[in-house]
Length: 112
Image (cartoon, rainbow, N blue to C red; front, side, top):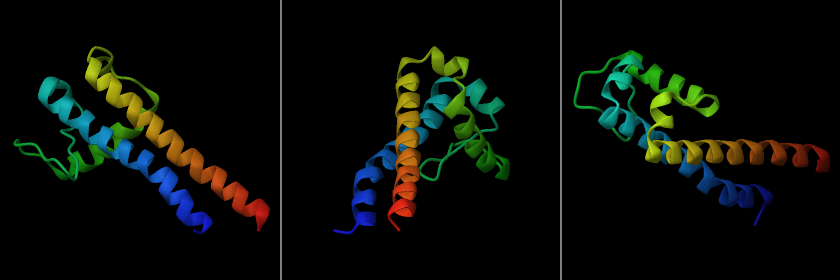
């Protein structure tokens, strides 16, 4: 098995976990914190769309929120135990995925 294949096998579960966590956070915000969901631009995911109307801005809202959530914890997440757990999964998945890719790139450049 080549180096790249091993990298994909090892890191993919972390990427998948981050994707699932991001979906769950948006769904929880919609179901339990509707006012905040509206204030955040009515975000949705590829795997889930709300019953309410949404706009093209909702697509951008989703990406913007996920970037913000990586570094800042909104109050609604702090007060929602399940959402806080999903936020930890999101952050861990993104950190390991990105960290693994950076380390792999460094190793590749050193061994090249």
